Image (cartoon, rainbow, N blue to C red):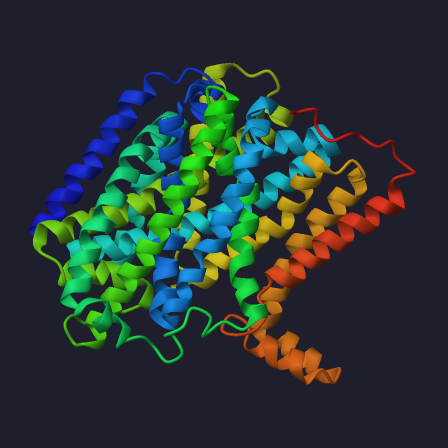
Length: 494
């Protein structure tokens, strides 16, 4: 454990030193939120990769791989398809010259959509940050076994908050490049060692869970769609992706960075799932202890299945993955609240230093809010899907309409955003409480009741009804109100 502690300590100190150095360049809101719009292709690609490969991948997808086996290799499909969409969108996004997604929404649909978009983004992203804290604590507790769980979560939260507030996008983007290199090296060095210890791929295959031997051997079609759609909707409309494209030095750099991100995400996601399966094989074979939670399987391998220095590298990789996602998902809502609420309604025309100070205060407040949420659930995969669904159903359809559909109206956009969020929350609450299954049973729909009872395992997740409701309302209300309000064209970006 001493080696693990040493490597992790050096890594965290280096991150904080970079953040402190970059903080000297932060003079206004554009510097804090967008790194002065000067990021190159290489830096952009690194920060995009490190942002998307987060706890949802290294803990959530690992948890699902532990549970289902080879079908987990289907999970990166949604991210890959979403990135291809971003490849096409990236130059258009950069030409907008905006700060946030809410700038785009207001330019097309008015100030109400800006407010709704901000509330939706903050709710979803604070949830995402909350389970990053728990994931970081899972690593810290293994390095420092005597540390209380609450103290470990709080320590991770404090580091993330301080680091993000220090220099904003400058600290986040440049250290994400180092994080991307570290996570790639850690996974690809550990993977062959774990596979060899498990008896090669033949040994791994012999330990797969029932039904996990075939790629399409586990997920029913509706459930597969439920698992893939949330991540797809999130990445297409993810404020972090747009914020980074807004930070590019030019549209060409934005597009090239998205192309490199596509290759990096698919490769690294597949390697993470393979690492989880190899580590699971060692558990089944009795070579390492079973983890306390399935999502901790890669962390378990780092501390029990690898040589000390390789294990320390993999542990640092886990922390790099967690921090690079946590700081991004904390910076995005902080930027949004300052830009879309503080500067827009509270202090119009505020000076650069004043806006930066406000951004740091908001980052602290949101970071502490995420800390409070961190103790409400110990699941990774299901919590990630729920957060993605709130954002994807509430914002992505309207954002795409703002960019591409002339027929969308202000009323349709507002109604769609409200419907998407409320359906996501209502469906999740109805499934968790058993209320939805009981009501469907009362109406005589036995199949729907059974699906609702099993939602989250083999049923219908919130994303399907939420997305369907959001799209239907967007189309229907826009059609009904298009004659009562003048149409505004899609944003003039080419």
